[in-house]
Amino acid sequence: MSLIAAHDLSKTYLKGETRVEALKGLNFGVEPASFVSFVGPSGSGKTTLLNLIGCLDKPTSGILRVDDTDVSTLNTRMAAAFRGRKIGFIFQDFNLIPVLTVYENVGYPLVLVQNTPSSERKQRILALLDAVGMAELRDKYPDQISGGQKQRVAVARALVTKPKLVLADEPTANLDHKTAYMVINIMKKMKNELGTTFIFSTHDQKIVGEAEIVYTLEDGELDGR
Amino acid sequence: MFDLFKIAVRNLMRYKRRTLLTVSLVTVGVVSVLVFISVSGSFKNMMIGQITDSFLGHIQIHKKGYVASIDSLPLTLNLGPNALQKIEKAIKQTPDIEAYAKRIKFGGMFSNFVETTNVRLNGVYPEDEAGTVPLLLSRVREGERTIRTGEILVPELLAKGMKVKVGDTVVVIATNRDGSVNGKQFRVGGILESATGPGGRDGYIHIDDAAEILRMDTIQISEIAIRLKNFDKLQEVFDRLKGELSKELNKQGKPAFEVHTWEKLSPFYNIARMIDVMTFFVKLMLIAIVLISIMNVMVMAVYERVREIGTIAAIGTLPGKIVAMFLIEGFSLGLFGAVVGDILGIAVISVLNVAKVSFNFGRQKGLLLSPGINPQDILLISIIVITISVLASLQPAYKASRMNPIDALRHV
Image (cartoon, rainbow over all chains, first blue to last red):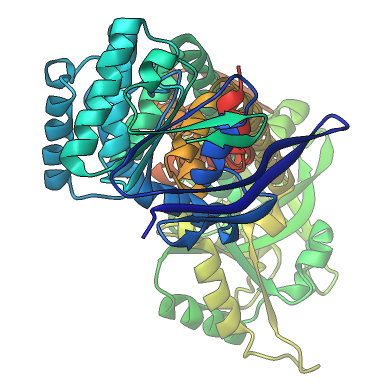
């Protein structure tokens, strides 16, 4: 069974008085434990699609099922709880919480989202920090580490709740090429080790080559796989 | 919860100067209120003490209708032996009463053989009176601090006006309840300093002398003044005495006696009430200071952390937890301000006590201010500050929790 199933998925929004069709009748599926990339130029609808899959937004029409849940039926609170249980996020700007250390940033979802017991929490945080190569910098604050290191911490934070799906919107856009590769490879490694599905958007053709499945978006339409 | 506190404190420390300024503002407010409460409370308590301990007593009992016509000191409304017996029985059955004093109050003429003027006099049992109003004899400026038969304590203004001194002979003339006039010579035993309030300028003689002038076969009492062991139990004792004495009915079937606390007998009670009203408004000002300063900080905190709010909302933090995070920040600001304010307030009050500040009230000079604050007041002020801090954070916190994560993440 697909982890994600989209049928005739559309999203329209108003920009001022102009009606923008961001996504036009998409049909696709994503299998569990896959490494998927959505590529396309700016404005093609990548971020809108990731927002829909991540339950941050609702489709205008069509059906979108994530882990067998019709996400368009979730209210704000249910959507937040669903994200907390099933989905991890990696952001383009890393979005680490500046007042928390590397260790605390990774542990944040366990403490404030999932209320995990402290002994289990520690074990999971340390294992993930070790896996992304940030164990030694666990006591540093975000402003004391580099961009690549921040994104590795973000990867660990996204995985710490053992989500079925991790969404990464342009995770390498603010990184140099070498670091971008390193981050993508860490994501891939985690996918292989944990069986988590990764979906990331990018417009970097070299990075795209690392994905197992690539969907191309053009003007809100899927242009091929 | 501990983690929420940790994050809140770290967020507050992110903008140290702003946090410090806000906490300082709250602290200044708390210190001001505590010092005001302690100083005004000290003034109020001292004045109440002066009035009740100098002449009034804490509670007074009269025959029904006496207080309404107290200006004429009517002898026709005095208490006979039977009534007195009933009242004394009720007093003795009431716990928390330290002492009581029976008085014959009457008006008369005071003569130094050259001039004559009117005078209000209290005939008292000296020991009972001293036990009930312990500051009375300390008001004797000249002469011995006692009331002997054949002697009179003359109020100082009267002594000055009539040019009498300790040891002089004077005459007191009074009309008894039957309308006949009688007089008696007295030696001036002492000059009595005036006290603020009604009765503060009365003269004092022994009750036997009062009975002799008024030609009473049996002593008929005008009023009974009562002193309590614990002033805080005023209402409790008053209720009990009133309840007990209301069973005694007169010929019209109405209560034969009336019981009053000092509050109903002294106009200073209105000043005390005014001090309470001022204290209330000072507390309102504190609330306004805390509300505005905390709300301002929390609105700024939300505005500056929009992307951060978007991030935590995106990764699944429930709206209620986002509200809690900001409420705890407001709570922490209030808590720091209240604790520091309490400590500094207590320090300022201690300094005022060490500095021994004195003031004048009416004709009483050099009264020593001894400000104090009770733990309940400190607790109440702290609770007000912390509660208002949380309330002031409510709107910004709610706004944060209602943010659309997509818009928040896009915020620059």
